[in-house]
Each structure stands twice: as C-alpha cells, then as structure tokens.
Amino acid sequence: MRLHFKSFDLQLKDTFKISHESRDVQPTLIVKLEDGIHTGYGEAAATRYYGVTVEGMVNAIKKVQPLVNNNIDCSPEELWKITHPQLKNNPFAQCALDMAMHDLEGKRRGLPLYKMWNLDTGNIPVTSYTIGLDTIEEMLRKINAFPWPVYKIKMGSPEDLKIVKELRKVTNAVFRVDANAAWTVEEAIENSRVLKHLNVQFIEQPLHPEDVEGMKKLYKASALPLIADESCLKEEDVEKCAGFFHGINIKLTKCGGITPARRMINQARKSGLKVMIGCMTESTVGISAIAHLAPLLDYVDMDGALLLKNDIAEGVTITDGKVHFPTRNGTGVKLLDL
Image (cartoon, rainbow, N blue to C red):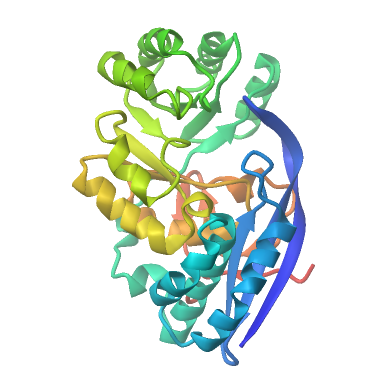
C-alpha cells in the first residue's frame, strides 16, 4: 500500500467573499491511496476559519499510516472506525482519507459509488451556484455572466435586503440565502418576511451557532425554512438541530467524510429534517464524491469546481445545475496531468 499527498493552490475565477473572509486562492490537499492494483483519490480544502492547513492534514494522516497499511483490505467504514480515534480532532484529514478509500473501494468492486449503494440517479436535486458577498454591481455582474437555475446568495452586510431585491430584477431563478451566522434574531425575523416575497427558498445559518435561545425564537417566528450549517458540524449535532432548524447542511470535510455523512443523512430523516450537502471551494475530486450522495438529498450545493479558473481533475460534471456522471468506477475521478 502506498499513500501519497499532493497540495494545490486552486485559483478562483473571482474573489470569493463571505461575512468573515475573502480569498482569491484556495489551498487544497489531494490524498492518493494505492493498494497495488487500484488507486483512490480524496480531497480536503484547507480553511483559516477552522484552523485547518494542508501541512496539518498531511501530518495527521501520516500518523495513522501504519493503521491504513494494516487494514487496507477493510471496507471504508471499517477503516474510518479504526482511524477515527487518532483523527477525530482533524475531520478534514479524515475526510480526505475516507474519500480516497471510498474511491478505491468502488474501483475494487467495479462500480461507481451510487451503484455500490444501490441509489437511483434519475431524480437528483439541482445544484446551486454561489454568488459571494460583494458590491451590488459586482454581484449583478456575476449573475449576468453565469445564468443558472438556483443561486446561493451570500449575505452579511447592511445592504442584504437591497442586494436580493436588485438581484431579483435580473433573474427569476430560485434564491437561497446564506447569512453565515451574521444576523441578529430581530434581523433574521424581519429579513425572512421580506425574503419570502422575493422567492427565496430558505435561509442558511442566520445566527451564530452558540445562540441557541435566539434560534428557539427564530424557529417559531421565521417566515422561511432555516437550514443549519455551522450549527451542524458532526454527527452528534444532527439531533440537536431538530426543533431549531428545518434542515441541515452537511459538509464532508467538517463531519469527517462520506462515512459519517451517510449516517447523518439517516439520522436527519429520523429527526424529520431536510437534508442538504454543501461543499467547500474544492476541485472536481471533492465535488465528484458529493455527487454520488446527491440521490439521498433534498438540496445540494456542489459548485466548488465551477468557481475555479483551472480544475485539477476530471470526473462528475455539472451543466445548468444538473449532474452528469462519468463512465468510471469509484467516484469517477481522474487527476489531470498538470
């Protein structure tokens, strides 16, 4: 068994802005896992907000390399369980390893992941395309330059409602609003009433994740459904969101990979929550893994590779919000010869 690491600085088409940061380049880690016959690929993007670096992920995975070597013939779920005690404090690293192991397993079995899980790809939700927080003029330019059926609009400025009103003038597409925990309870209640009349489908993470009392009040008063993001990072958070949110947004990197994400989906269904999977700014390696889970979802946000100037891989493609799977096994990913 051989384990390799490759880091890339993904160049974005436009500066990506949210309420707490902006960036033009996204560092990401690609994990390559070989068993002597097949090769699996996984990805996790570094993020300053969560204190995650490429170097830190590499070091974490190297510490469990003996466990990986000794258990390479296990299923992805078994390997996740074996390595989790040492990787539980670095879910981004665990995600990259788990994704690579799933890709490897699919190739071993000669099946794409969705077939390995007996999923029907005939009714996959349309993916949204993110419009980062910016001046109104710049956000209008981005929408006009990239016609799409569903947009996620990043919020977190004093002009939030004005932004949505102006964007609505140029498109009839569905809007989803992501406040990135930037609003107060009072702002969120009032904004929900206005946004409902602007054909906004739901509001993602309106309040700070620690504002539990605020979410109780908002849940009762909001005119729109509320989707948890920062409030639902890992498996034990799912049950806590019932009664405070109408749905959850799962991020593979934040929860530790495909293995726990599938469990979170099942738990959310039992709790009566809608389910979405979102992405970081990542390449087609990570996006392709998300796509195989799409048949299980109500909503999906996997536009990461669409935001890049130059991708580093081939795999699942997205056209007008619709997913197209390649005729390859595992996640379907093939690294480009860069």
